[in-house]
Length: 161
Image 1 (cartoon, rainbow, N blue to C red):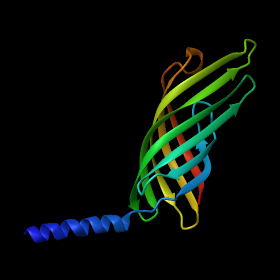
Image 2 (image 1 turned 45 degrees about the horizontal axis):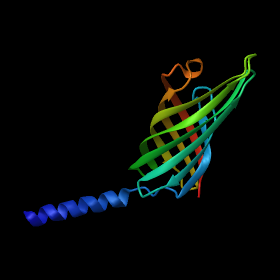
Image 3 (image 1 turned 120 degrees about the vertical axis):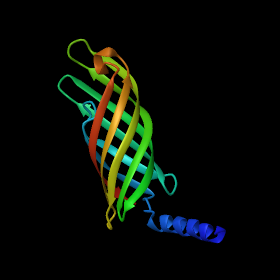
Image 4 (image 1 turned 180 degrees about the vertical axis):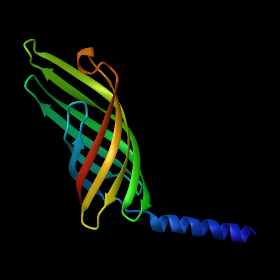
């Protein structure tokens, strides 16, 4: 009985490793969504191990009465669903700044914590497409973000290398 149990565990581990999706060493592209007024972000992903990576996103925005930037960093864990489909979850945070120029030139710098959950497809060509949900809890001046929760949904298109 002991031999069957050990053999079963070894076969299970082998099948999981055979189904594991290799994640790219690097990926660079765009994350298109709405993150409290920041819209499109430049996104970079770096593999940290076989099943986790670091994602860095830089967004900026110009408007008639404001301009600003936001930098986010997230540590993500990746699990294979089937073939090129993966799902992932992560935690992180970031920093940002807004400059309102509506007559009284007001600046606001803020920090935020973020979670992330999403699904992605890794094509046979070096293209990665993803859809994710990122709740963010920001802390800054009341005039900018009211110190509350923001929900960000985005589509990502990245070139893998």
